[in-house]
Image (cartoon, rainbow, N blue to C red):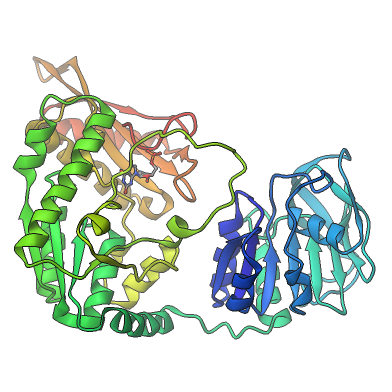
Length: 512
Ligand code: XMP
């Protein structure tokens, strides 16, 4: 296993992704973690991430001394390289040429890090992002690669197997970067690369059995991939000690609720309580047009309904949740002070304490695409596993203003047509999220010989890595025209379609 020490880079999670792609398990700890935890974790090698601080400044973050005392290989990336150099007796200065974006790395001498990938004399594209740089190497280090503005772009201490990179191997803009990380964890650190989803499935099943014993588990299904995969895995481990409760708020996409119920009951034979609470939810939303009020109304009702159902089935000792690794990483934040709430996310965080239940979270160590791989391993259909993310409050936040059954129906139809066109064009997997929004605006149109006065439908599609930032998807006009024509022809209640070309920031992905 590999440890990644986080110095606050935006892309630390990508390092973990690359390591796991090599079939090696890894975890991310903040740089100031208690060294005892590092010792306990027992990594075969450690990666020091980049970060926003300036290593030349006094009081800037440092790696715990233990990291250098453990005798394991080290890979310092950007800030990680510089703090490594500074802590081992080198010098780092700020105020040199800044280097951002694409740069050419001139390979000077062979290295275990790029063995079989790069050779001396070659030049390769790498992605830089730094203001400071090393001006004097620590004892034992040699230069293996240079770039125009970074004479120490790639350095190595051959004896200790310490490597330092001024560029970011974890981003796709460094085309060979993943290969370097694979070399580091497999060849340099000597990890086996046998961490697969099949192995994870087996370990997870045993861990669930051990944790739960003869206890009873309840799992709230949302219809999404995470809670479904968690439930199927837990069922594999403890069978009918698990009860799934699907609170159907009536805000799902077309046919989605039925699909989930059929899949669980018929395909997996998992006991499922299907609570049709759509009247309650839509009733409570009536007359509410403030986005935060809508979100909070749905979140609170969800907990109420779930709790009532849990009581009906006689309670449970454990609550199962599809929590993912990105939610549990203790990220290093340099923003200082509490961040503003942009949107109240729908979650059931308060439930376990309220109902006196312990948590079972078998996906806590996985990234989203690993959950998808696990889902496939468990036999879930590709079409389900590869679904775009869908927000907890559902279509309510895609109906700006007041929500009614009629509007939800129109939206569901338009959304289905739009997604059908996207699938037909083979674009579904290239897009992070695509959906229709029904605007609370009616406009005048003409159809046949008659005047129409109907709603406007906005289409949204974005690309993103983690939902934190996003760009609108650049469809060609032919596609948009086809989708718009079909929606207006097939969906009664819509007579105008627009396409949303806002990125995030300044927009958000959802409209509310
Ligand atoms: P925004 O709109 O904030 O969305 O740019 C970022 C991502 O989060 C999803 N989203 C939610 N997911 N509960 C969720 O589980 C929520 O309340 C919620 N609100 C937004 C959104 O669909 C996008 O993928």
